Image (cartoon, rainbow, N blue to C red; front, side):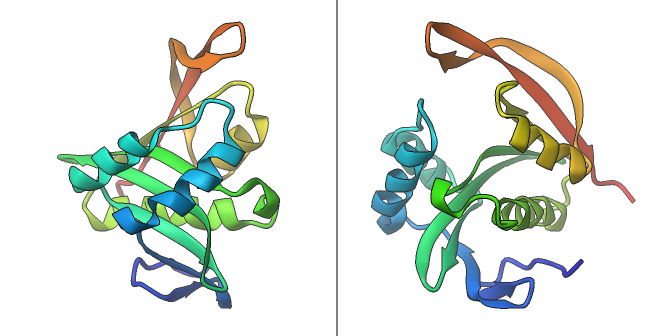
Length: 164
């Protein structure tokens, strides 16, 4: 496995056409276009703007210079929380989500986090399988956490320990 760095323009997995760089407010139009295609209950532009204003680490995944995904992380003392990780629907199934997830976890490790948390919908088996395959384990549930058609959906809370 190749190490993923957060340096702007760093190629992922020896692919010169895929890079990762910090997200900026100027990127939000393109981020929102992906978010709206990817989720039936998307984040708002204001949520992304608030995350950036709060200084949350956020990255944009680019393919040949075009945004195809993003990730947002929050940090608190020795814990990190992956708030959003998304690859454009038309680019999914090519390992890009795994690269982005690994980059977020590495960023948490570089910021001295001891563990990383995330929530995922039980109705998203592909994401659950990805998180399990990267070492995340289910540690609990948040009842009625997500909006859903016809009501609310629980969240599976997952975590990975980063201690050596």
